[in-house]
Structures are given as C-alpha cells and as structure tokens.
Length: 233
Length: 315
Image (tube, rainbow over all chains, first blue to last red; front, side, top):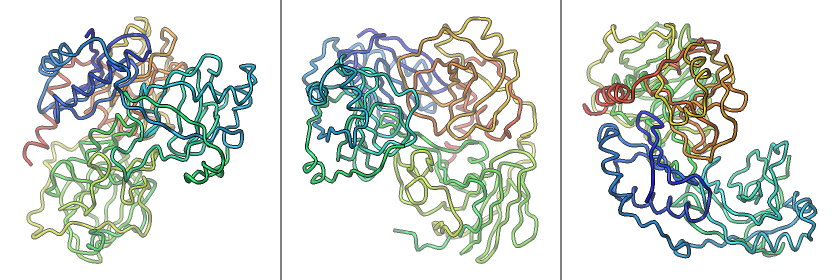
C-alpha cells in the first residue's frame, strides 16, 4: 500500500494514502485504521480517519517519531491494495422525505428538472460510503450523491437545523446528529438518533460503513418516534 | 452514585468555570473533541500540589469572580492567573496547598495578569468517568462536565469530593518556577507539511510580524489579527486537525486550534504550536501581542517528554 506521512504536531502525524476522494481509497483508509488501532493499542491516543488520510496522535512517553514510523511501516506494508467494497457493513436509515421537514427538497428537484418523487428515488437509490466523521459528534460525511441532485451549500447557513435533518452539499449527504447551525440543503428527516452518549459506540455511523436511505411515510415516521417540530431558522 | 458525598458548593461561578481533566482519549474518530485544560502547566501543578495524579479533574476558572464554600474538610490548591484569593476574608497564597474546613468560604478576585485559574481538590471530585474516560466539559458540543451535558458550572452546583484519610503536608511550588504571564510571548511552531501552500514571502511575514490575540478567541481557537497570510487558494480534502494547528482561512488571519477544536477540517495549515507554548498562550488576555519562531520536532518532543515525565511518571 502506497503512503506517506506528514508531521502535524509534537505527538501527531498524518498518513496520506492518495489525493482523490473515492470509495476504494476510503476503504483502504478504513482498513489501515482498523489494523493500526488493533496493533498499536494504547500507544495511540487518538486516530482520525478521513477521506484520504489518517491522523495519528501517539504517546510521547512510549514513542518518538522514529519508533512510531518503524512500527507503522510493516503494518501498512502487510495490507493488500485491493479491497472488497461489498465487505463493509451496511446501515439502513429510514427517512421521511417531505418539504415539511426538508425545506430544500422542492428547489433541488426543480434545479434538476425532475419531480420530487424522482429526486427522492435518486437519493434513496444510491449506496453511500462513510468517508469521514467530523464537524460535530456523529456527523458523517457520506458520498456520493447522484450528480443531477448534487447541490451547492446555501449561501447563508441556517442558524438552526433540527437533529435528524438530512442534507445535501455538493456530492455529499449527511444527517445532522444534533440541533445546530448548518448550510446543507435539507431534504428530509430520520427518526433515528445519530449520536447517543448512552450507547456504545456513541455514533450510529462509523467510517468505512456503507449506508442506504429508505423512504418512510408520515405515519411510519411518527411511529418510529419522529417529530415535526424543531423549526428552521 | 456518589453525589451525596460532601465537597464544594459553588456560590458564584464567575465568567466561565469548567471541570477539566487531561482530556478524552480515543474519541476523535466519532467527531468528539478532546477537551482538557487550556493551560496544562498550571492545571498539572494544581493537582500536584493537592497530591493528585495527572488525570484528575480540576476547575478551570476563567477571568475570576468565583466563590465557593467547603462542605467538608478539604485540601485545595489554586494556581494560574495572578488573582486575589481569600478564605473567610483572609488573603491566601496561590501555588500552594491550602486547608479548608466545613463552612469556609473561598473568594477569587479578577486577574491582574493571566486569564485562567485552576482549583484542584485533594482526592479529586467524585465523578463517574464520561466520554473517552474523561469528565472534561465541552460546552460547544453539549457533552461532558458535571451533568454530562456540557454545561458550565453554575451557582448552587454541588461538587462531591472523594474522601481523603489524612490531608497531610501542605505542598508548595518552588518560587523560581512561578510563570510570568506578562512576559513577551514567542510561540514555538513545528513547521507543517502544508508549507508548500504558502509562498516564502508569506512565511517570512509570519515569522517576522507581530500578531494580536483577538477577543473572538475561545476554547476552540485563538483567533489572531495581523498581516494577512496569502496561500495558494483551493481548499484541501478535509483531514484530522491536531492540537495547536495554525489554520489559515481565506482572509489570511491565522487561527490556532485549541482543546475544543473540530476534529476535521480543510483549511491549509502552516504548522502546529507546541503544547508548552499553548500553555503560555492560554494565560494571555485578548489584545496581547504574539510572535512565532520555528522549533525542530526533536527539540519540541524532548521538551514535551520532560514536561509529561515530570508530572506523570512520579504518580
């Protein structure tokens, strides 16, 4: 496996595996992360996989840069370059796609010159990959949204987006785990809890997983604990 | 639960008082920030003087104005900003252990120099470990802290303390180690991998100019103002953000990312300020002038190891 590292702090390096965002590279990053965590154990304080990189924070009382690289090198060398994408776990997420909880749904359909139903079918017909977790606890960046409904972020972000809201930003899609400000185009809402401190792991989604969304109607949404309130501001 | 244990009662929390231990481990991949004390040096000394191991949670009190009452016999230590400190109206020293008896009232003034004061209690607070094995408070996330919801401490909050058999001697920090929070500040920078994004004239400007710490700084980031730092446009693919990373957004005004930073981001980074320099930065008021100088990784690692070994290995 080809890789290079960059020094990003006194006890931190960032491993780079490529320069192009894509599913195959995301799988390689995920596989490397899993191996590094398993083999390095408590020599790592944190490991943060993202699209093409893994940031590693190590314990200076156990390692310096040289000893860490000496350990990381054979671990990465032993990883195969090819990955079977179908191996990764699939998480299915119910979504109430509707203008009442997805105020940008109509605009996205209009922009693409298709009906709302077609836009929903496109979004829910795709299998997505978790490229990274960030921005907020449990916020998973998923790709890739079909080109026709890919939509740039709002020029002015909303001050408040309710938890569970599903949005699109360019070719990425994500669910807001908590009420927060946000600039993604909102198309629906899930009744599932994306981040829960009383659950292990806290985050429903983890990098390396695959995700599919399936449409549910208003009654199902309510039955699964969904709420309409929250409001947009 | 251990909330019935007597401890400290908060009378006035001041501007911002947070529980902070050494921070979370192994959580960043879930999008959770690490937290931890802004000034580890003063925080670690407070615990050392109170006889506590490294990880123990202490109170981080920003800008003073804090009052609390002891509900039991306690030994405490107060370090950090230069601040007046009274117990039952009589002045007391900082950087030394102090005994408090039930009913004793501790009052902190406002800093003459420095920003943050740390209050450690011998035996530590009796808390169940939270996310990442930590009780650090992440206000922005709404996680951690006394209630687990990220809230800052408030008037009336009760902090249960672990019982201590005997309070023992009163430890004191040797005077020659007292930090000077008014000294001109030059931050050590480990040069970053994205340096090639910055023209050499920009780098020269960065290391030869004075930057001002702005009031828009917080536990997420120290926002600076000064000569703009141009770089070769285009955003990067988002990647993990390390402690102390110097991020340069489109307006060219650098931001030093701190304990409560986001876990990933895509702005170009010039390098990373060392943790020891961040300790010093945490005690500078908005408006303070800051300069930067490069440090070799090896030297920065030796400095950091000495610091950690001093506080951790003797536990």
